[in-house]
Image (cartoon, rainbow, N blue to C red; front, side, top):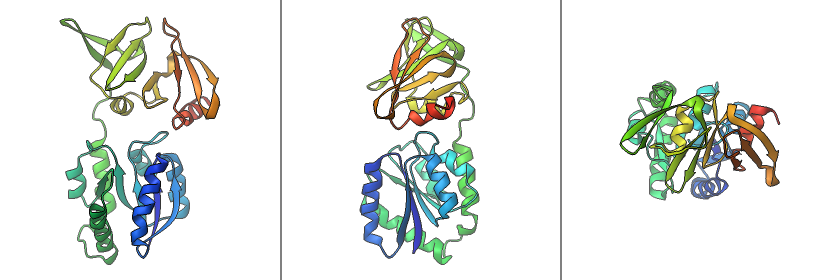
Length: 255
């Protein structure tokens, strides 16, 4: 039986996965649950599970960041709603990857694969952890963004990071807002920006907002552990943090 930890920032996702794994109560013993990568890191290092089911896009610390900091090396099954993370590459490197919503038939394959590792029947088992770290490294951004290109009429403007107040998502579109109040449509998703922008200059505070840290003017406590952030831009934009991202601000400003 595998000692198992579930790591996902969505409580419903953890509950659903736990129900699905109940079918395999002779295979998995769930010994812990974590709501973000930082909690997951602490839990894995403390409880030393044999298997973890891990989401990728999470506040505070992504699944990839968490894995890169582990000293204990469990078998990893990624469970995520995002399909742009090179599924085939994971499969070829003996790393399993479940796309949400998880299907029972696909989970059956994962269980069979984990049992093969446990029995030593998989020739790649001994190099599993090295394969994992190699794949994480390949998926890291190759080049950080130094400016953002935006179209305005027939021109393409290059806007330096220091000129940017924040990014905001509206439905399927992500806009860049400059210090002087100009607003431009970008070609990036919020998740991509969070990944590529320098972490010492920008911080994600909600599903829809990434902020330039140096352009934060004021932080006000709100209900349910949230904050209202006032920016220094011309409009003095006020941005509400998401509850699952509030820890990002707390950790940065020690509040």
